[in-house]
Length: 88
Ligand SMILES: [Zn+2]
Image (cartoon, rainbow, N blue to C red):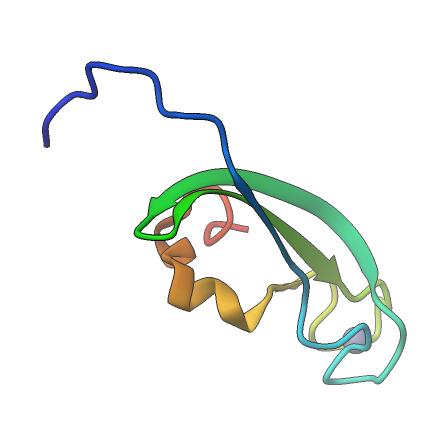
């Protein structure tokens, strides 16, 4: 890996990634957006500022209680390596 010698240019694109559904896949209850993480990625199209919203089920009786739901598009944009997201 080569260290960057110049500042990354300012983001020219914004991309908001939200969970596939606002409802829990297990209990069908409305989820809360627990938190959002941000990352800047450089692609062939330019510098993109990504905001990834993470939803969680808040029903204690649900098998997916407090497990994060992420946007499905994240994988195609290299977010699987996004530290801190996959460890939740
Ligand atoms: Zn649930």
